[in-house]
Length: 394
Image (cartoon, rainbow, N blue to C red; front, top):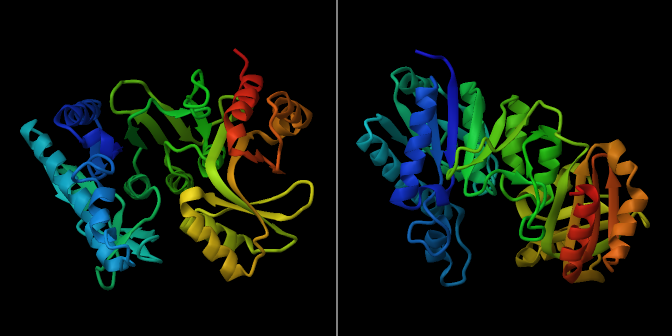
C-alpha cells in the first residue's frame, strides 16, 4: 500500500447537504484512486441559522446574555463537529469506503493553553496510522483537542478546523493538506470590492500568512503558520470544482505583489508613544482579534479591532493602561502584501492612488513585506479599487 498520505479538510458549507456531501465523497474517492491514504477533518454543518452549525448551537448558551463557562462552551462546540463526522462517515460507508469516525480525543490530539484558544501540543498518530494502514479513512472532528492529563476538552479558537486539519497533516507527514471551501481559492483581494480580482495560484508561507493576518478570510493564519512550521504544503480549493486552487508552501510567490487584504469595519485607537512587547501584541491578535501597527508619521502605537469586538478592544486598552482619546469608529485597514523591494518602490504610487480615489490616510505602517493604510470605512471600496488596478493592471 502507498505510503503517501493526504489530509482533506471540509468546511461547514461543504458538508451541509446531501448533494454537497456527494461531492465530498467524489474528492475522497479520487484521492484514493490516485494512491493516497486519506484522512478527513470536518467542520460542523452549515452556518449560523442552520440547525447543527456551531454558532446556532452556541446561541443556546448565549440566549440569556450571561457569561458562558469554557467547559460548557466546549461541550456544545464539539457537538456540531461530532454530528458532521457521523453524517459524513455514514455517507462514506454507503459508498463502500470504510470510515473511522473520531473525536479529537479519540484521534489523540492534545492541547495546551487556554481552553477556548488552545494550541495543539502533540498528536499521537499511532491509532490514526493503524487505520490508514488498513485502507480505512479516519474522519476527525475539526477544531477540538483535549488536555493529556485530564482529557478535558479544549477548542482551538479562531480558524479551529483549518488549524487542526493542518496540524494533523503535519503529524502524519502528509504530502499536503487540502482545505476545501466554497470558493476557488484565495483571491488577490476581496471579490466583493473588486469583482475582477484574480485568484492566487502560488504563494509562499510567509506572504500568505501576512495576507491572512490582515484580512484574507478564506484560510486562517494559524493554519498557514502550522503548515509553515511543519513544512507541509496547504492547498485551498473548492469543493464544487476540480480547480487546483491556491498552493501555499516553500515556493516563490507568483508575483512581486501577492494581494491587497482588508479588515473592515474596524474601531481604531491611537495610543501614542508607548512600547508594548511583541509577545503581548501577538496574544492580543491571536486571542482578542486586536491588531497593532506603528504609525509611519508619528511612531505612535495604533490598535484596531473588528467593530463587533469593541469590547475586546476596551478590555485591552484598560488592562494595558493605554489612552483612548484618539478613538475612531468606522475605519478600515487596507494592506498591500508583497516583496519588500516591490513595496518600497511603490511609496509615492500608493499615495497617488489614494489621493486619486479621494481617500485620506489616517494612519499608516510600512514594514518589510507589507504596507498598511487606515482609512475611513466609506473610503474602503475606492481605496482598494484604485490600489488594486494600479498593482494588477488588466
